[in-house]
Image 1 (spheres, rainbow, N blue to C red):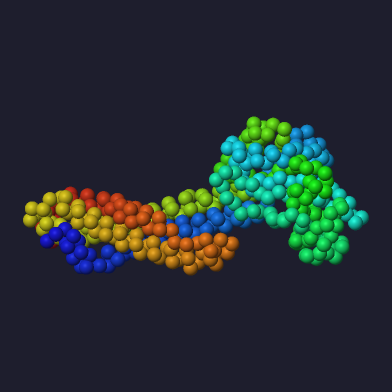
Image 2: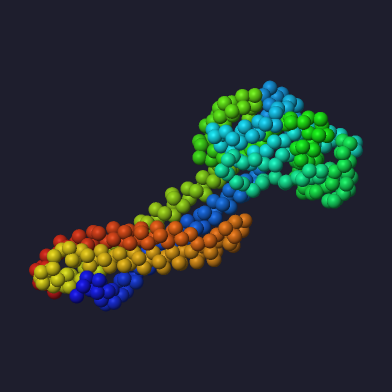
Length: 382
């Protein structure tokens, strides 16, 4: 009888032990697949939520009076608009969603407002990101809630601003910040009405040094910026940057530090104990095989071959169960990125490779015990 047929007959005879061992791997593989699939959704969700906190870097002209900057919310100095392309092309500056702005305070119908010209966002080469802020078409305005309320303005209305006519394309919700008195338009429109062609007074960006130690991040940013744009300086919105860094680390490290070790240890112990029980139950069978002249290699092959079959079956069913669980529960948990949750078939390939090897490794000690059993002692005890 071939080794494979003998393994199948033994499985059919001791099916409970086989099923329990397979369940262990189904549970482990399923939990890992579900965790990885959901973890990717969690990371995407975290990135999206943290992104919505806003841009956390403000790059302003060097020599800006910082007291007036914090008082007014913008720099009194300007710099060339071309700095934006220079920054986006730089490899030593890790950032996304780079946008040029021109901000100044104006009087509009007897009230103060912050006119903010915003250029379309630029991403470094090779990175494609959806815009974080509103995309403002030429000839249109996006009004803060207080600005619109003062004059009872609504979307679609035509208004005059500094000698030019604009159409209101959107109105922001109340924020309780300076944004409520902000009038946003395209950068070219702002430069045109202010007579500052090709000039900006701020570059905003999203810092993405999420793996850099907190005490080194700002220093690294300033050092990189000095080499790229020496006539500028950077202000980091620390609370937003820290929230992004901490949350993304939690999302990425939770699985590696908690879920994976527990699953591996529990599954390994479970399979090892069941394999050991299986070897003890088969003492007479192993003794007869050895008495008939079969060597330790065949005995080890029977034990480890059974473990490999458990691993293959556990990998297939575990992947199916874990994926089904992630697809079933994921959309209800990760609502922002629910549509992006889908089966990851690379996990199936890894499962088919790793699970049989893991099961064989967990059965290695029982296999050694089976090989070292003295057939005379086994048969005499029976």
